[in-house]
Amino acid sequence: MLRALMYILPLALTIYAFIDCLNTPEDEVKHLPKVVWVIIILLFWIVGPIVWFAAGKMRHAPAGGRTPSPFSTGYRNHRHEWVAPDDNPEFLKSLREENKKDESLLKDWEADLRRREEELKRRERGEDTGTEG
Image (cartoon, rainbow, N blue to C red; front, side, top):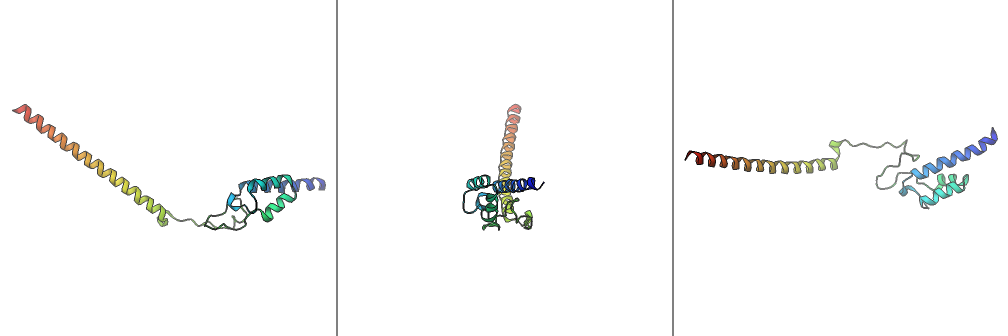
């Protein structure tokens, strides 16, 4: 049983590190490209995963306000702040732009309808006067 544990534990660590490396966004990988880290983890199956966890990945949220990936270690303790649509300026701006487009379209339709009604009235007057006289 102890012999099996000596092989299963490093194998589980390698598999976990491999999946963690694949799921880590490229901008959170440190020192080497992601592909090189994958090769290191797979070739050096005891030391590679340990080095990956120690030096290969950022352990804090990157600058620029982007939240860490769901598979990074600090994510579970990190609260993602949700902004309601009423408080989101980008969403409100998009609504205003859509509203302006819709109003413009509606004005065009109304103008077209008025023009058609006037044309129809002119035809009716022209046909009525032409048949009576």
